[in-house]
Image (cartoon, rainbow, N blue to C red; front, side, top):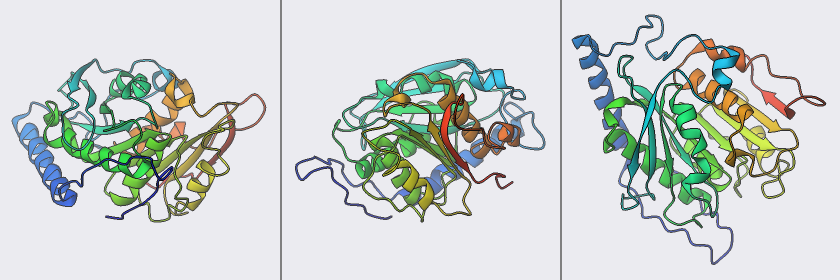
Length: 313
């Protein structure tokens, strides 16, 4: 696991204890998830109804369905105490329907000085599309990007191993998201955990600019008028440093500020849901919402958009 040393200033705290060996835990979680799915399928109780792709969840998507405030699945929540080890607790949003088997998991981290409440609007919105979503608090509100990345890592393991809804999560299909320094943490854990299926850094901030070692399909969302993590020094260099062979996209919100991801946003939701569906669920039905890329400029939601379309099958 790569070790980063980014700090905002000499007195900025970065308080995270080193996690236990993750690769072993991840392997164990994936194995347990596979056994659980096989058992459910054998019992005839939770087999997905999609023969061509066992990870498809929900009906065929439409423009209306990917922009809706709620998807086809009813959802519920579970609160996770701040006393949990490795991160600061949070809220798990999950589909209540068990008829389609397990779901992909998504951990979402907030930005510098922010709490999980700044990410709460993603919870039901993404979970209702067929994911188990975990919005987390960090150990302190001042943790740096790499610390946030390690805490996202710990939260992923908690979600598939120790949470009350672990039996609903497919431990082999996990994704990460985060805002600002949480977005920097998203890139950091994507670099260190290549088995992840998708990463979505939201107006990300990090002193490291080169992410050429990332192997995870990554959607970078920037904001044109961001004065905290300027797209010229953060989002664009991050995207351009990703391998050209990688499934990747850069979406720049027209006229938006650094804090656009903190408020319910249909454009962010549409593209985030489509990215997660395409790469966590391997659901090519959502390719239509990603390729061809949208137009940019006057009258568009985007001041810039870059993409590796067509995405790999």
